[in-house]
Length: 280
Image 1 (spheres, rainbow, N blue to C red):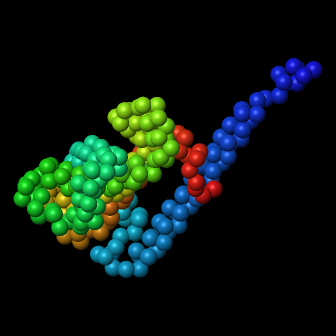
Image 2 (image 1 turned 60 degrees about the vertical axis):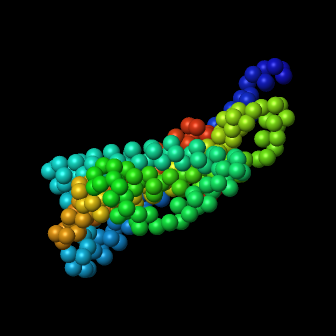
Image 3 (image 1 turned 120 degrees about the vertical axis):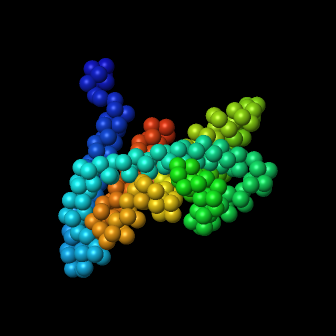
């Protein structure tokens, strides 16, 4: 009888995993509904408010959507997006390649922190828009200055978050690795880096916003193509619908890239969501 009962009863772990998955799906569905409702309310408020002011000053979402369709149809928007995307991706990837190792080294070794930690903090606090004229002198008005602005705006945020993550690694884990005679490179690659992945991903998410600001600033100053050039041209010609359409594209791109980084984080650190606190 006991054997039959054991066979009939499902494992407790399976029931727990199933209930957890069902709760997660319900929360995901609820979150999507709340997000959709928030977007609808915002669009309604925007539509009503924009119709109360001079059309030169603001455009309602309906006009912005019409302008967006027209810009896609005439090819101006895809060309601008492609011109901005190339330096954006190059600068962002360079910021990751530089920022993550620098943050790891600063957080792991006191001598490196003493040598360049202050420089990273100063770079993060500096208003990078002040360096734009200098970058234009160094890199010209084309691709290079845009990539340089994106990298400079992003690299310090990634470094600081990685640095903070390394300092928050439990000391007991490092002591265990030392007790088993693990070398410093092995402790770094097998203990520190896996523990720091959530902090690195946080830095990458913050870096997305910084990178968008960087590419727009560079294009505002150079006024040569890209989404920033579209915004400048629309502003000069008093076309708020086209201007807001370009801004909406930037916002949607930033949201999509942030979501993509979240998916990567769930792949690299699936345990983080189960142990991290958050709203329910």
